[in-house]
Length: 276
Ligand SMILES: [Zn+2]
Figure 1 (spheres, rainbow, N blue to C red):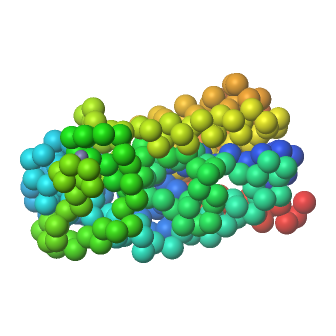
Figure 2 (figure 1 turned 45 degrees about the horizontal axis):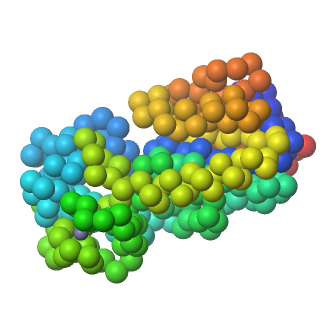
Figure 3 (figure 1 turned 45 degrees about the vertical axis):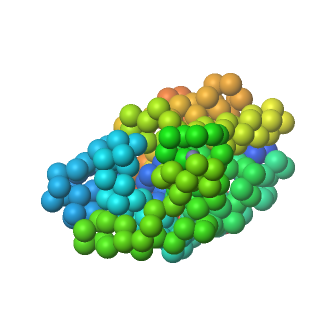
């Protein structure tokens, strides 16, 4: 373990660009609930447990059509939670490491919580592959507009998981608005915003020469983040530091796996950097 932590510190010190690739495990150390498995999910949302609604059932356009107060109860609660969450100190470590590199840091995340922007990362350097809870779109949708959710303050009955106030409306057709998040069985997600983020990421990647990917809390169950990390290694000559308490295995001998949680792993690397 000490060897891999020292190797990670070395890789980060030698890189000309830092790429942060984050999955759900990144948020756990900020106190955010883990939706993996029904047990953890229903502990966070007991009303959904009583209704035997799992994550994939409530996180779907069907749930908004079927019972918009319930679906917005779930998403409204999360929106308020993410707005109020203080990102854990690992975010600041990553920012500091990025600032020391020639090209700075970029972020690829499957999280919709907006925590990287909240932690002070440049919004122009964040790619949210599953969208963002801080942005809304029309349910139908009547057009391709995506707008910020700032004006919507959800009032949620947490015991019942129901929205008490009016849900947000589409400014164009007046119909129900929903989060601009890629849900399960979702054919209506508007990807224009994520596509623009992707284009900016690709333009930045074309300039970097020795990127290091620090991947955090990204499991094999939702593989989009791991696919991205591997593409940086394969197509951009990057090196990979994978921090994951349960699945730390890495594909190549030059990559580094650290079997720790996100914050513990980042703090261990920071300590190793100070010893260098
Ligand atoms: Zn509309």
